[in-house]
Length: 472
Image (tube, rainbow, N blue to C red; front, side):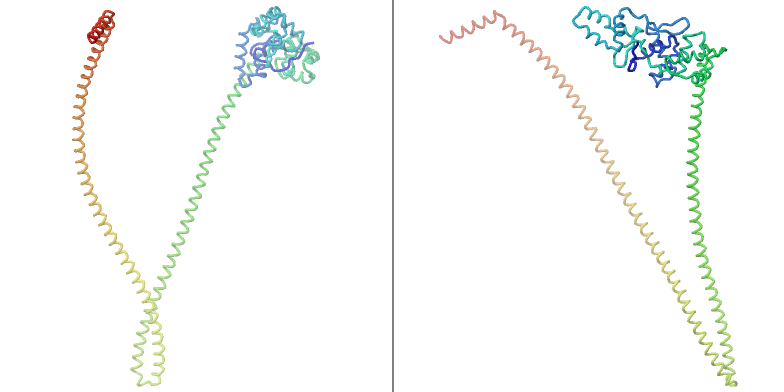
């Protein structure tokens, strides 16, 4: 009984080994969906297909048949047979370190095992072995979890094992070996895809060419759908942008309408105030005109009364009794006249007050004009003073500029003289350096002469003679 491999597969090569072992023969395009279910979920299906095709070409355990389908070579490398039999015996994954450590004191066997499994490339290129993510090695033929494969793929595997066709009960019994399924679910898959063809008498077959055509059509259809989706998304973004712009414009228009309404309300309030003031002014003008008419009327009445009083006085001698009544009437009229005159005096006093206020306002305006003219004259005087100062400063600046230019010219002359003196000094220094070099060379020559044996002997003899003379 085969063992089930626990853990995830290590690489794309191991996924392809397991898939090709289960389905026996497949194209790179058919392998891509299975690989994408296990790994490379972030890649597109076309990118996964490229990586699958590249991996199939690079490894010798995969062979390409005349039918353009890839198969797994289960013959393997003879050098790995010992490790293969060891895994068959253990029925559980092993790491290379466990195999090497289990050699014990049998050094020859250990060396053989090391030579056999030293290079993991031998196991990678052997279709019988797969590597797990924990670094252990297992066999490709061990049972896999068929639940990882969709029902459609299991049906295709069954038809590839029986290319002549299968009835629905036979297909269900064959699929149930890998995964429990019902006739209803299997029949639903058969009727869903057009490359499963019903020949008659309940016999079903699998058309691989139709499957390829169906995949190409679906690929193009999905591509068109993706393009349509991108176009819809772009149009949706454009409409959203336009909606946002219209919303912003609506907000601006609403704000402008509110401002306009506020301005209209303020204008209406100002207009009402103006109308109210105009009404008050017109009422005052009307009252003044009525007062003037009443005053004129009373003046006329007074004149009439005076003329009448004069006529009554003229006739009072003849009409004593009437004179008394006339006098009383005259007294009443005089009283009325006095009241009227008082009213006129009060009105004249108010008019005089208004005239005084107007006169004060005019005086204040004249005073302000005089102060303004005084301030303008002061400012003009300050401007003239500033212009004079500016001319003086310009003159002083020009004098300073000429002095600085003369100083710069003098400094340039001194700089030229200093440069010429520096050149003379440099020539003197070079001459002195040459003299020093010649003196050093002469000193070396004299030292070499003094170091000569004959010179040293002569120097010693001279010193001896000097000492003898000194002793004598």
